[in-house]
Length: 335
Image (cartoon, rainbow, N blue to C red):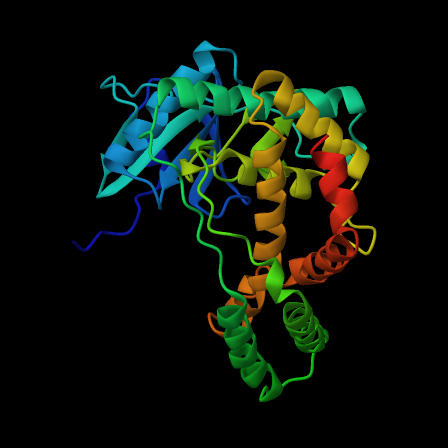
C-alpha cells in the first residue's frame, strides 16, 4: 500500500477535543516516532505519528499501559479522540495524543542511592505486573548468542571495509582499533561463549529501559516511563543488566559505577526477585553481546548512518573495563 505524505499536525490535532490550540512545535528527540508538542488553552500534549508500531500492536501496547497504570507504574495514557478511540488514522498514518509530562532525562550517576534503589524497584514492578497480566507460554526462553567463529568472521569483513576506506577520520581510526581489540579478545576468550541454557525467568519486557525513556522530576523520582514500542518477550535479566549498564556507565575508561548498579539491582529484587543465577546469566550474556556486536560500525559503513558514531568510544571503553573486571562485576551484582 502506498501511503500519502503525513498531513499537517494541525489537521490531525483537530480530531481531539482539547480546546483552542495556541502552538504546535516539532519535538527533536525520538527515533521510532515523530512527535509534536501541542499547547492549548486546556494544557499541553504530545502528538505522536507512529512509525514502527501500528494497528493491533498499538492497541495491545495501550492495553499494557492501562494495566501498569492501575498498579501505580507512572506511564502516559492516550487521550481519547473525539470518536472515543485511542488512535486515529489520517491519510493512512496512525496518530495518538498523550498528556505532555514535564521532567528531565538524567544519568543515574547523579542520583542518590535512595533514588537509584527506587528506580530499580520501578523496573521490578513493571516486570512483575507484565508477568501477571500478560502470562507467556510455560516453555523456557532460549537466548541464542553469536558464536565466536561468526563474530570473528564479521569483524574480518568489517576490517576489510575499514581498511579500504577513502577517509582517515577520528572515527575511522577508532573503528579500526575497536575491531582489532575485539578480535584479540575473542581469540583469547572464545571459551566464554554463553551455554545454550534456557531460562524460565522471561516474559514481556519494556524492551528499551534507559535514561532517555525515563522522565524524572527535580528530586529524581520517576514520573514517567516512556516509549513502549519495543514491548516484547525476553529475559528479565537482560533488560535489568542492560538498564544498569546504561544508567550507571561513565562513558569512558572508568566503566560502570558498580555500587549504584548494585543498588539498582537490589531495588529491582525488592519488588521482583528473579534470583542471582538469572542475573548472573544476564551479566554473562550482555558482556558477550557487547564483545561480539558491532552495530555502530555497521551503521556507519554499511548503512551510511552516522547518528550513533559518538557512542563507539564509550562502548569500547566499557567493554575493555568490563572484561578486565568481569569477576568483580559478577560478584557485586549477584549478591
